[in-house]
Amino acid sequence: MSTPWLHIVGIGEDGMAGLSAATRAVVEAADVIIGGDRHHLLSDAVAAERIAWPSPFDALIDTLEGLRGKRVVVLATGDPLWFSVGARIGRAITPAEITYHPQLSAFQLAAARMGWSMADVETLTVHGRPVEQMIAFIQPAQRLLILTTGCETPGQIAAFLTERGFGDSPMSVLAAMGGDNEVRFDGIAREWAHEVPAFNTLAVDCVAAPDAALLPRVPGLADDLFQHDGTMTKAEVRAATLAKLMPMRGALLWDVGAGCGSVAIEWMRSARYARAVGIEPRADRRTMAAANALALGTPRLELIDGEVPGALVGLEAPDAVFIGGGLSVETFEGCWAALKPLGRLVANAVTLESEAVQIDLHRRHGGALVKLQVNRAEPVGRLTGWRPLMPVTQWSLVKR
Image (cartoon, rainbow, N blue to C red; front, side):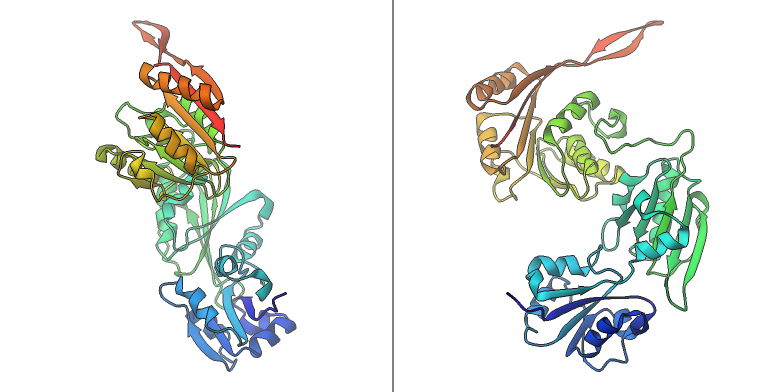
């Protein structure tokens, strides 16, 4: 069994004084200490070789591997395994070689300052990540704790809230929590104008106006929330499609014939850290998909210009595949071969030619074949009648 040689230590604004005696002894005995400028200042009384965060950050693992045989301490803020460097290191180095020393996280400190129960808040980070990803969490009466990426981030989030009818939401920025320089800024989203420190945590208590946009994370967002050219998976069919695709935490979707990106975007909104690759040969539709991804809180949607099955070569194996256009035997076979065990595949068809392919594939591979027919009530002169959408044949199966 490996002997731990690497210590990842959470440190707060109170520095070495805030560490337990055992953890303080680990830091004081280190041969090498790695961290940011702030971490080094908080532990500057310790005599050890100092290394700053490498650039690019991925070089950290090579740096650590080169220090085997020494007593190495990596300093992080708060809890190293909560939106911090500890998780990244733990994926590359055997956990048995690492000892973690957590401190109170910024989330816990912020919740204590706000008087909020941790069980009743969403914890997010946009530190070094696209700020737009928090949009998916804007919900009535939802409380958010957000690790920000700089002094400008609270203002950006205030704008997102205001644009969506949540301008009356109280916001608090908390900085240097637990230290002598702790500071707090309070306001509401539509009036936010504070200049705040770059390193901060944001608390938002979402308050919806009567006309606020309601954007649930369950699938079936209204069609008019997407930029589209009329060719898209409509809301009712989209909800049924996502139910069969089964979004799961961190899972990857291939959206083949992504169009305006509606299925991929709803997949990513439905589960934490869900990922999606949209394959779409038309540049105008990729442009719409990118704009929709930003507006609806999934800025990490990856869009690829290409035709299937050729565009699938070299992509990471998916957990689910949606074929929304251009179904062929070759496309199915390429997707099916790449799909992981227990992966889900859904193919929707509106043309007789694609339906014929579905029927043949269903005969050979099994699965469920369903005809979806949606009628929407629309004006007929001064009265109201049912207007049918094009029927959709849906074939779905799980790879066993």
